[in-house]
Image 1 (cartoon, each protein chain N blue to C red):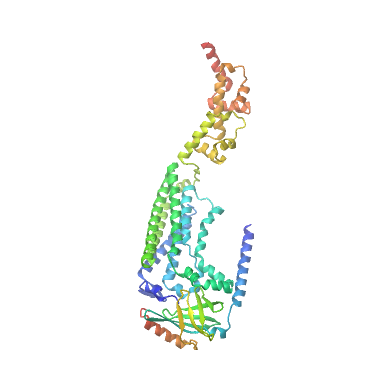
Image 2: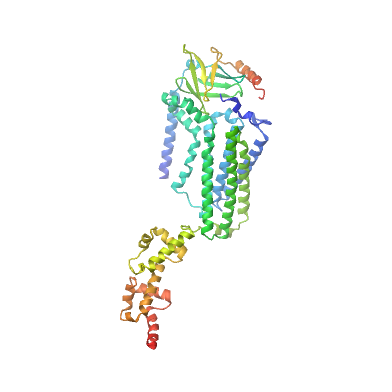
Length: 140
Length: 400
């Protein structure tokens, strides 16, 4: 009986891994499609600005917060919806009439407006972002 | 993307940075105590071969340590830096209550193997598997189904899942209160209804102390929840009493068992008798039982069996057996046969029944065989039925 359970659970785990691999490869966007989301997003609140830089890396989206400099991965869900991998927060991108991405809505319903619509982030920009962050948040 | 005001760095003041991990003095104290507790829990697990109940206590300690380490993982920035590790971290706070209960039970009734229904106590652990479930839904592709994505990304669902509120801590608080209360009632019941051995008495006293400490912890927890409600105060400091409790538990238990000799341990591990009745219940059923035997003379029925008598009392055979053994001090056959022998004594002493044979009197008193009657008669009166009858005859003759 115990042996049967071990075999069954092993098979289930293998099946789950296979399904996960197949499914994760199904729900992806091309680099070109992802580039549309890349850029710097800004939120102003009580007189200060916070930034989030979204970029394409290894055929997936990543973002960096201005206040901690941590890099996080975004997993694609469907439409213009993504999810912060691990944390599970949803990230919803919004478009204007011309179908260009102009803002994103975070899980806490805060709206971040895209401020450099045509640029993708380079390493130099990342360093600049860090300097900006330290000015914004001296505690860091 | 999370609001920077909620960020842990704004709550605690980093005084030291090791490998880019911010730790305050409080973090160090907590981690030091957690490490000590981990060693103690390990020692208790190792020594649980001697006293098996200790593995429940060691599990209890390990769960509190794991919760503390998870808190440190989030508080030290590691979780925000490496969020992909989050789904691999189990949150076991809903196990504290059941572990308290099983520890109490194992000390009172002996450490029996868990039954299937006992595992259900650990089902609420699923409430804290949110990161694991979300990852599972994501990697299985279910979250990518447009309808599911729409629901998942809706502000209401996201608010429910990720905005910390009082509801998050309430289930854990309820679980702790219920299981601590349940454990306490077991201790009281045992103290009221049995006369425990010296070891068990010490165990019960210890369990009481253990539960008082847990109740104090629950009081701190409740205060923290109220403070969080009023002023969004961080519940970071709760971990100091919690982890101190773990350290204290480990020290006391290990020292206590260290003093026990080999004989003590053997005596200690003796399986206890299971208690089915409170004293009041036992008295009530005993009265009913005597009434049935005396007034209704059920013993005269040769087909009287345990199930018939249990049916009359409206309790199970197991309970009747336990009532007879533990509270009357006899087994079923002795209990019934004693009444039959008393009846036979009356009949043998009655001169108007002298023309009946002993076998007839035996059958009339509910005995199925003469041999059993004679054996029982000898057992309860010290003489055989004929000896008893003969001892009465000359006296009757003399008097006459």
